[in-house]
Image (cartoon, rainbow, N blue to C red; front, top):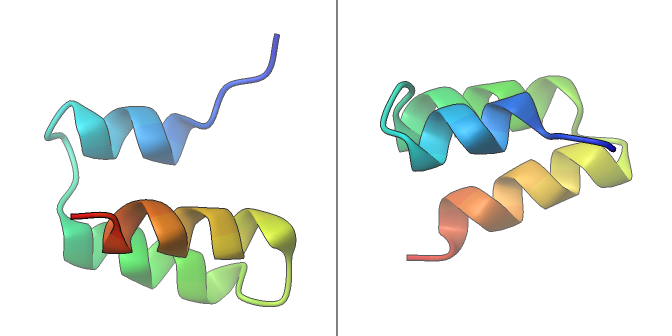
Length: 43
């Protein structure tokens, strides 16, 4: 199984949208970073 700890933390309210976007910037050149950014921009 594969899990996305940042997604879990965000959906459980342990990190903010701003935190998630900052993390996604670190991985911005990867599909993982794009995935995190999409999660933050869903709502």
